[in-house]
Image (cartoon, rainbow over all chains, first blue to last red; front, side):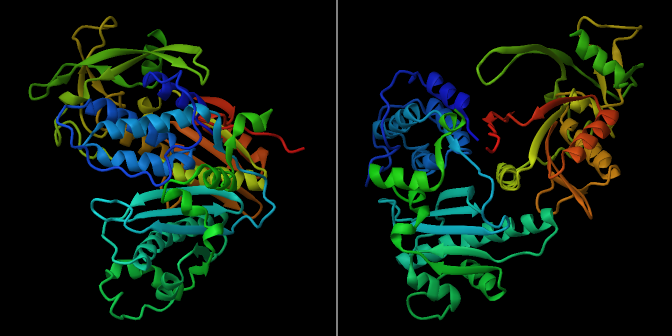
Length: 271
Length: 223
């Protein structure tokens, strides 16, 4: 599944069809802040470009985080933002043939496996965190999100907990959809996180000093676990596949995760 | 343009009539478009007659306008499922889909530029036209009715997904306005559904799914 023609069209429209390709959509530890330039930037062109990039994310999970970050600054543009978008375009240039591939199942088909992750206070201005959630059906990556959280998390545990709640919502929906379509019983969704204290908290939300402020809506994850709809397990940072949705990674790590997500050149696959 | 007028006439979209005093007729216009495939080659030239929906007033000319479209996530889940199970995924689309929707409201329009018949230049619409605010909803309603009649059940979790199942068969249909994605374990079921749909609407059968909403889908046969 790919959007090759669409990717090429975006590059053409942006006048970037001859740019030099690069390896990652965003440099590691890259941060953006609101633009402070007084010169007016072409906001409409930026918005329309971002809009097209967002649609491309439908088959390109590897772009999700980078596109998410550049779309946060629609109303406060600066040169840095354009530069960041250009980096994304250069990355696309080198990977136009990329897409997701789904294989014939070797695993049980109704097994859903999710990963949730967050960066803690990744936005250097408002200190909000970013949620990354992905779901596999068997060994195929079916849904992914990278989203800035609505609240300011006070600890990395809380940020992970909020991400897990978002993952639980998605997981429950997916599991119901599968059960409905196949006419089978709803099977519990397995969710992997890399934060021990968030796991402990979701299994047993004890209201001690550091977690009593967490909004009740995020305790949805706890309810799901109690009802047996979601099972949480720990995964080491190395095995955390949702990492690519929460922070810009180094080239080696980025390529490693991209391969793990089964995102690659689908044209090559065909040949 | 001729094809479009023929489609409109075949659907009995309108009838020539006098405009009652308290009604206002809505203007029409022609929209021309070049259709391309993923490589950018011209597939066909298309003319579409559209109503100037912006001239419609809420409560008078239309009421509800909401119509669901398929979530891209659902499409991905189902494609993954099909890949896992080795099912075939087929694609059909309904020609001039919106012209099939029954119109609940009384709407008068001007006759199309260049194609005026009879005396009087106003016509009353029986079926929806492209551009009318309620056209997508009217079409979705019609399609829903026909799919239900064929024994399909609309999924509660995504109301653009329809399922028809019995003991030994399963057929899933995803609806994106006039695009239908059809998948299931048995090719006979898929083919039967295509025949059933062709009896109801003017359909084009696009075979195995390859290009949908700008997304290219390639399928390799297993070795």
